Image (cartoon, rainbow over all chains, first blue to last red; front, side, top):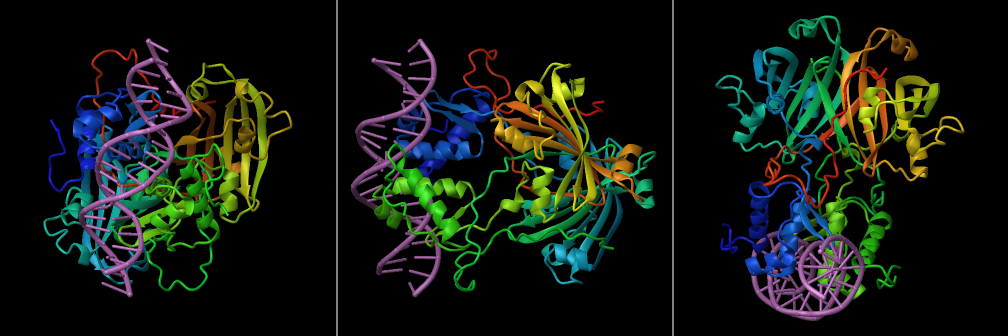
Length: 273
Length: 273
DNA sequence: CAGTGGTCTAGACCACCCT
DNA sequence: GGGTGGTCTAGACCACTGA
């Protein structure tokens, strides 16, 4: 039991939140009601505002839903409705397939201009470069090409190419936190056609992705998927007008207290080779 | 001035929120600080919790950012980082292009099985069916096919095909609120090749979209974009493990207090013709 | 140091839902 | 009516930031 926010140093609402998170994962099913705010107040010996803070967090995460006059309930999972920063391996496993990889290339080289720009580095900066054929249950699915600045993870490929580059980055405290991807459709090149063992259709889906860990770009990658074996699911939010701040500050941007955290740079197009 | 939450019947935090929203759009630029919580407390004669509730809402929306010990600031706009439920016309205009449409087909017919399933209806339900060639600055970009249940909007096509189907739906209180889209790459059919005036490459990007207004599916649409002229930008969130409710309820689902609001149905694949 | 946001209390009244 | 969440008060102490 997680009774009494006994953990010293921890905030009380964190204890309540943890209790509710545990309840949801171990006791309750979708649609079940959680204990009322007032009963949680007594259970943890905290004020109602504190309980509400804990619940608010879970509501914002989409785990719970409030219903005035009725209670607070476990929300239907929206996990599958979010486009996530996942890797080929994770995605394949999630769909019940066994992922595989064949390393076609593994080297260290000076970053070409396009790669350097995507990584916010100078052209020629040393980068790891890995090209892999990805398979699912043994069937070729995509050719994947990745670039990672050497200075971020000098020993990244010392023991060969890791099964998961994302996992290898995480081990080095470069946890991928967000990313941006551009998807296009194109004809496969003869090399791709052969590597992917495509017959009949030539159509492939190309993706170019920038992966960020914290503020820095940690990886740039391009992939080429068989058009007949791969699709992307995208949830779409309402296109409601957003609050837009005033365009021109009264003076320059001197003394600006915070820095924009998400540089709006696009993924550069064009061939990196 | 929006002084004193004077509007009767309105909640106080709504007045504060409106004041701040107005500030952001008319006075402040990205990075500027908003008035401190305590000064807003005095300005509106409300308690600090009320002020915080107003600010919380804007922080959750991504309009503001808090920084402990420093203040609360206008956040950089994230508008372009969200995949939105937009239409071809809106997207084209956003990119500075002039959208156009040529109606290739406009009829009313019984829904084929695939369409009916996507719309959560019985096969054979009467649906409007529209096929249009979409252009940007006069250049063919895509062939777009849409199905809308007749009973939702019987007079939808009485005055010809509206410029924007979404706008037409909104006029009928069927505002599109969310959607889901599946993207694939494929070879163009000979008809598509001709309609899109494609030469050289045959690759197209196909999308299948279900659009929801409230709880019901209001439209199913498929589009076929020229691979060389169209790309999709997708922001990727962190793949952090989500809280998953317990799988099996202790008994059946009788007495379930809330209904799952987002049916996890996938977009059916296959040809609707 | 003064000022900011972060957390927290112990109440209160209201609107809403279900029985 | 009794229980639920929604809003609100008038304080309090803390941690952090920047001058």
